Length: 114
Length: 113
Picture (cartoon, rainbow over the protein chains, first blue to last red):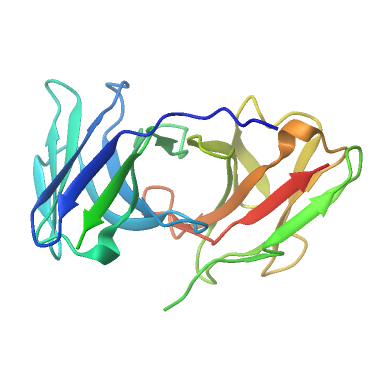
């Protein structure tokens, strides 16, 4: 049967270029954010996280930026490689409360052209 | 590197049948979760589990669903009477503490026919 799903935003980049993937979150009570990478047929893989008392955090080839004023999160990948091709999800969680669930965003498909 | 493992990788079942999805969380983790992802859609929270009881569940997690930690290593999700719309990837995850990163398994693809 026909499947109905979300139309994923797609970012197409050339190998070696920098990639920027954006995410808008909705809950102002969220104060912990995570980026996950999901390759086809696999589970979400943790990339980097950031807490709301920070606005920038760097990892290996990745940087996450948080703008709480406009509730915006971005993931920057330096020198993008073919192995970076995947769907990238941002997720949010409200720290300090009763909930520890992650709320995932829609996802962005990153396609790296060799 | 420690990882969350799930079995089976793919389960096909007839509508109305019971299924049990199995997970082995990372050994020193205390918090366990089930999420699901319908094809082409977002990853959705189902349930979290701590200290041998459910700490939170979503609207999706109705009476047809249950979770159990039958021994010191396994964490299971049971669907009592499967429906076509239960077809999805089911991901188990675990975290060491409540506010630390969650590690996901590779998922079980459940197909209800």
